[in-house]
Image (tube, rainbow, N blue to C red; front, side):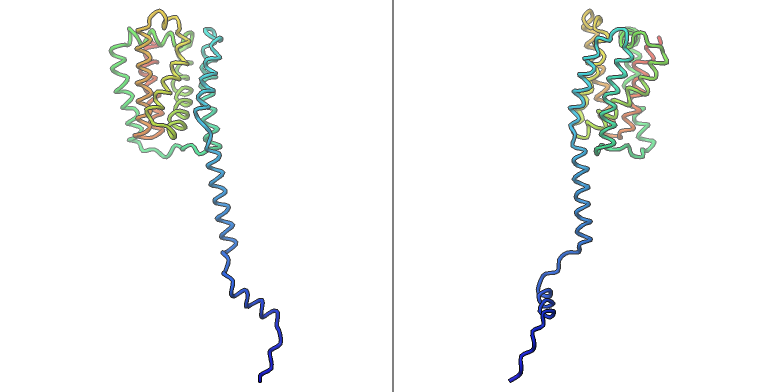
Amino acid sequence: MMPEAPFDPLEQSERRLKDQPIPPDSTEAAADSAQAGATARATYRGASDPLFGFIIAAALSVGLTPLLPGNVELRFSLAWGALAGVSVLSWLLGNMERIDQERPENLGWGILYAVMLGIPFLVTLSQQVLAPAAARLFPGMTAGSLLAFLVFVMPLAETLFFRGLLQGQLAFWLVGLLAAMWNIVLFFPVMWQSVTDLPAVAVVIAALLLMMNLLYVYVRKRNGLASSWICQIVANLIILYIPFLQ
Protein backbone atom coordinates (compact mmCIF):
# COMPACT_ATOMS: atom_id res chain seq x y z
CA MET A 1 0.00 0.00 0.00
CA MET A 2 1.43 3.32 -1.16
CA PRO A 3 1.80 6.08 1.45
CA GLU A 4 -0.40 9.12 0.93
CA ALA A 5 1.30 12.22 -0.44
CA PRO A 6 1.60 15.08 1.98
CA PHE A 7 -1.03 17.83 1.68
CA ASP A 8 0.23 20.72 -0.49
CA PRO A 9 -1.92 23.91 -0.23
CA LEU A 10 -0.16 25.56 -3.20
CA GLU A 11 -0.89 22.62 -5.49
CA GLN A 12 -4.54 22.59 -4.42
CA SER A 13 -4.98 26.33 -5.12
CA GLU A 14 -3.42 25.92 -8.56
CA ARG A 15 -5.84 23.08 -9.32
CA ARG A 16 -8.80 25.25 -8.32
CA LEU A 17 -7.58 28.06 -10.58
CA LYS A 18 -7.38 25.68 -13.52
CA ASP A 19 -10.97 24.52 -12.95
CA GLN A 20 -12.36 28.09 -12.90
CA PRO A 21 -13.24 29.91 -16.18
CA ILE A 22 -10.67 32.43 -17.34
CA PRO A 23 -11.96 35.99 -16.74
CA PRO A 24 -11.82 38.48 -19.62
CA ASP A 25 -8.80 40.69 -19.99
CA SER A 26 -9.13 43.50 -17.50
CA THR A 27 -7.52 46.01 -19.87
CA GLU A 28 -9.96 45.17 -22.68
CA ALA A 29 -12.90 45.29 -20.30
CA ALA A 30 -11.81 48.69 -18.99
CA ALA A 31 -11.47 50.02 -22.54
CA ASP A 32 -14.94 48.77 -23.45
CA SER A 33 -16.37 50.34 -20.32
CA ALA A 34 -14.70 53.67 -21.06
CA GLN A 35 -15.97 53.62 -24.64
CA ALA A 36 -19.50 52.85 -23.48
CA GLY A 37 -19.29 55.66 -20.95
CA ALA A 38 -18.08 58.10 -23.58
CA THR A 39 -20.94 57.11 -25.89
CA ALA A 40 -23.44 57.55 -23.09
CA ARG A 41 -22.03 60.96 -22.23
CA ALA A 42 -22.14 62.09 -25.87
CA THR A 43 -25.72 60.94 -26.22
CA TYR A 44 -26.68 62.70 -23.02
CA ARG A 45 -25.04 65.96 -24.03
CA GLY A 46 -26.82 65.94 -27.36
CA ALA A 47 -30.21 65.14 -25.87
CA SER A 48 -31.20 68.79 -25.38
CA ASP A 49 -34.58 69.82 -26.76
CA PRO A 50 -34.14 72.30 -29.65
CA LEU A 51 -37.83 73.23 -29.51
CA PHE A 52 -37.15 74.74 -26.09
CA GLY A 53 -34.52 76.97 -27.69
CA PHE A 54 -37.03 77.92 -30.39
CA ILE A 55 -39.61 78.90 -27.77
CA ILE A 56 -37.04 80.97 -25.86
CA ALA A 57 -35.93 82.82 -29.00
CA ALA A 58 -39.53 83.44 -30.11
CA ALA A 59 -40.49 84.67 -26.63
CA LEU A 60 -37.47 86.98 -26.65
CA SER A 61 -38.51 88.34 -30.04
CA VAL A 62 -42.02 89.07 -28.76
CA GLY A 63 -40.73 90.50 -25.50
CA LEU A 64 -38.48 92.94 -27.34
CA THR A 65 -41.32 94.52 -29.34
CA PRO A 66 -41.38 97.57 -26.99
CA LEU A 67 -38.02 98.48 -28.56
CA LEU A 68 -39.84 99.20 -31.81
CA PRO A 69 -39.73 101.28 -33.87
CA GLY A 70 -36.59 103.03 -32.68
CA ASN A 71 -34.33 99.99 -32.09
CA VAL A 72 -35.10 97.58 -34.89
CA GLU A 73 -31.45 96.61 -35.34
CA LEU A 74 -31.02 95.83 -31.63
CA ARG A 75 -34.14 93.65 -31.59
CA PHE A 76 -33.03 91.73 -34.67
CA SER A 77 -29.53 91.26 -33.27
CA LEU A 78 -30.75 89.91 -29.93
CA ALA A 79 -33.38 87.62 -31.46
CA TRP A 80 -31.07 86.12 -34.08
CA GLY A 81 -28.30 86.01 -31.49
CA ALA A 82 -30.50 83.82 -29.27
CA LEU A 83 -30.96 81.34 -32.13
CA ALA A 84 -27.26 81.34 -32.89
CA GLY A 85 -26.38 80.91 -29.20
CA VAL A 86 -28.55 77.80 -28.85
CA SER A 87 -27.02 76.36 -32.02
CA VAL A 88 -23.42 77.06 -31.00
CA LEU A 89 -23.95 75.50 -27.56
CA SER A 90 -25.40 72.40 -29.19
CA TRP A 91 -22.46 72.29 -31.60
CA LEU A 92 -19.93 72.59 -28.78
CA LEU A 93 -21.60 70.44 -26.10
CA GLY A 94 -23.88 68.14 -28.06
CA ASN A 95 -23.86 66.05 -31.19
CA MET A 96 -25.20 68.47 -33.80
CA GLU A 97 -24.10 67.56 -37.31
CA ARG A 98 -21.01 69.42 -38.50
CA ILE A 99 -20.54 71.02 -41.90
CA ASP A 100 -18.59 68.56 -44.00
CA GLN A 101 -16.25 69.36 -46.84
CA GLU A 102 -18.70 70.38 -49.54
CA ARG A 103 -18.43 69.69 -53.22
CA PRO A 104 -18.55 72.75 -55.50
CA GLU A 105 -21.60 71.41 -57.36
CA ASN A 106 -23.61 71.37 -54.12
CA LEU A 107 -22.86 75.03 -53.52
CA GLY A 108 -23.76 75.71 -57.12
CA TRP A 109 -27.13 74.02 -56.63
CA GLY A 110 -27.78 76.26 -53.63
CA ILE A 111 -27.12 79.38 -55.72
CA LEU A 112 -29.21 78.05 -58.62
CA TYR A 113 -32.24 77.29 -56.43
CA ALA A 114 -32.07 80.77 -54.89
CA VAL A 115 -31.94 82.37 -58.34
CA MET A 116 -34.84 80.22 -59.58
CA LEU A 117 -36.98 81.36 -56.63
CA GLY A 118 -35.88 84.97 -56.42
CA ILE A 119 -35.74 86.21 -60.01
CA PRO A 120 -39.46 85.65 -60.83
CA PHE A 121 -40.48 87.52 -57.66
CA LEU A 122 -37.96 90.26 -58.36
CA VAL A 123 -39.29 90.75 -61.88
CA THR A 124 -43.02 90.59 -61.08
CA LEU A 125 -43.33 91.96 -57.52
CA SER A 126 -40.33 94.21 -57.03
CA GLN A 127 -42.05 97.60 -57.23
CA GLN A 128 -45.48 96.61 -55.91
CA VAL A 129 -44.57 94.34 -52.96
CA LEU A 130 -40.86 93.69 -52.38
CA ALA A 131 -39.55 97.24 -52.30
CA PRO A 132 -42.25 98.58 -49.91
CA ALA A 133 -41.96 95.44 -47.76
CA ALA A 134 -38.16 95.71 -47.50
CA ALA A 135 -38.43 99.37 -46.51
CA ARG A 136 -40.96 98.52 -43.77
CA LEU A 137 -39.17 95.39 -42.53
CA PHE A 138 -35.88 97.24 -42.06
CA PRO A 139 -36.85 100.85 -41.30
CA GLY A 140 -34.05 103.33 -40.78
CA MET A 141 -31.30 100.91 -41.74
CA THR A 142 -28.48 101.92 -44.02
CA ALA A 143 -27.58 99.80 -47.01
CA GLY A 144 -24.41 98.62 -45.26
CA SER A 145 -26.19 97.57 -42.06
CA LEU A 146 -28.86 95.69 -43.99
CA LEU A 147 -26.22 93.94 -46.08
CA ALA A 148 -24.51 92.70 -42.91
CA PHE A 149 -27.80 91.40 -41.50
CA LEU A 150 -28.84 89.63 -44.71
CA VAL A 151 -25.45 88.09 -45.51
CA PHE A 152 -24.03 87.28 -42.07
CA VAL A 153 -26.38 87.56 -39.08
CA MET A 154 -29.66 86.16 -40.41
CA PRO A 155 -28.28 83.22 -42.49
CA LEU A 156 -25.83 82.23 -39.74
CA ALA A 157 -28.47 82.05 -36.99
CA GLU A 158 -31.29 80.49 -38.99
CA THR A 159 -29.17 77.98 -40.91
CA LEU A 160 -27.40 76.67 -37.83
CA PHE A 161 -30.58 76.44 -35.78
CA PHE A 162 -33.29 75.32 -38.20
CA ARG A 163 -31.30 73.41 -40.84
CA GLY A 164 -28.44 72.33 -38.62
CA LEU A 165 -29.98 71.58 -35.22
CA LEU A 166 -33.73 71.24 -35.73
CA GLN A 167 -33.80 69.43 -39.08
CA GLY A 168 -31.73 66.61 -37.63
CA GLN A 169 -34.66 65.72 -35.34
CA LEU A 170 -37.83 66.73 -37.21
CA ALA A 171 -39.27 66.27 -40.69
CA PHE A 172 -37.90 68.80 -43.13
CA TRP A 173 -41.33 70.25 -44.05
CA LEU A 174 -42.13 70.80 -40.37
CA VAL A 175 -38.82 72.63 -39.94
CA GLY A 176 -39.79 74.85 -42.87
CA LEU A 177 -43.11 75.70 -41.21
CA LEU A 178 -41.42 76.53 -37.90
CA ALA A 179 -38.85 78.72 -39.65
CA ALA A 180 -41.63 80.59 -41.47
CA MET A 181 -43.47 81.08 -38.16
CA TRP A 182 -40.25 82.44 -36.68
CA ASN A 183 -39.91 84.97 -39.51
CA ILE A 184 -43.52 86.09 -39.10
CA VAL A 185 -43.09 86.56 -35.33
CA LEU A 186 -39.85 88.45 -35.96
CA PHE A 187 -40.86 90.65 -38.89
CA PHE A 188 -44.56 91.37 -38.66
CA PRO A 189 -44.41 93.48 -35.46
CA VAL A 190 -41.96 95.77 -37.28
CA MET A 191 -44.48 96.41 -40.07
CA TRP A 192 -47.62 96.00 -37.98
CA GLN A 193 -49.32 99.10 -39.38
CA SER A 194 -48.96 97.77 -42.91
CA VAL A 195 -50.16 94.33 -41.79
CA THR A 196 -53.40 95.77 -40.43
CA ASP A 197 -53.95 98.27 -43.26
CA LEU A 198 -52.99 95.93 -46.14
CA PRO A 199 -53.78 92.34 -45.09
CA ALA A 200 -53.49 91.09 -48.69
CA VAL A 201 -49.88 92.28 -48.87
CA ALA A 202 -49.20 90.66 -45.50
CA VAL A 203 -50.56 87.36 -46.84
CA VAL A 204 -48.27 87.61 -49.89
CA ILE A 205 -45.24 88.29 -47.66
CA ALA A 206 -46.14 85.38 -45.35
CA ALA A 207 -46.50 83.06 -48.35
CA LEU A 208 -43.15 84.25 -49.71
CA LEU A 209 -41.45 83.62 -46.35
CA LEU A 210 -42.96 80.13 -46.26
CA MET A 211 -41.74 79.35 -49.78
CA MET A 212 -38.25 80.60 -48.96
CA ASN A 213 -37.94 78.50 -45.82
CA LEU A 214 -39.34 75.38 -47.47
CA LEU A 215 -36.74 75.85 -50.20
CA TYR A 216 -33.93 76.13 -47.63
CA VAL A 217 -34.86 72.91 -45.85
CA TYR A 218 -35.23 71.11 -49.19
CA VAL A 219 -31.77 72.25 -50.29
CA ARG A 220 -30.41 71.17 -46.90
CA LYS A 221 -31.91 67.72 -47.36
CA ARG A 222 -30.75 67.43 -50.98
CA ASN A 223 -27.35 69.15 -51.06
CA GLY A 224 -26.19 69.70 -47.48
CA LEU A 225 -25.98 72.40 -44.84
CA ALA A 226 -23.48 74.69 -46.56
CA SER A 227 -25.58 74.66 -49.73
CA SER A 228 -28.64 75.70 -47.72
CA TRP A 229 -26.59 78.45 -46.11
CA ILE A 230 -25.48 80.00 -49.39
CA CYS A 231 -28.98 79.54 -50.81
CA GLN A 232 -30.41 81.77 -48.09
CA ILE A 233 -27.72 84.40 -48.60
CA VAL A 234 -28.39 84.64 -52.35
CA ALA A 235 -32.18 84.62 -51.87
CA ASN A 236 -31.91 87.42 -49.29
CA LEU A 237 -29.89 89.52 -51.70
CA ILE A 238 -32.33 89.01 -54.59
CA ILE A 239 -35.65 89.22 -52.75
CA LEU A 240 -34.85 91.74 -50.00
CA TYR A 241 -31.65 93.68 -50.63
CA ILE A 242 -32.02 94.62 -54.30
CA PRO A 243 -35.60 95.92 -53.82
CA PHE A 244 -34.42 97.83 -50.74
CA LEU A 245 -31.93 99.73 -52.90
CA GLN A 246 -34.54 100.75 -55.46
